[in-house]
Image (cartoon, rainbow, N blue to C red):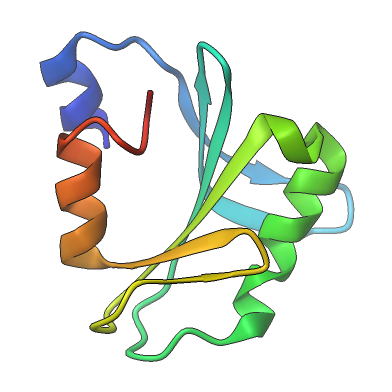
Length: 102
């Protein structure tokens, strides 16, 4: 992510997110218009429970202000409860294609 931002000249801050209850999201990128929240799991099958923290960040920041992504080792992209689930290769292809961090 940092390499992508550097190569493209985008100066978006990257961080992780944690609330007072200890819920966290692996990557939070503040963009010109909104945020991208990205949860990364080294699993072959995404489980809906992985969406919990992404839903929480959308509640706290406002649903219209956060696009949520789940990145995993599976083979098929999907969308569950407004979370875009992407296999690693698809995520990287979309990232470098300018579709994730706009």
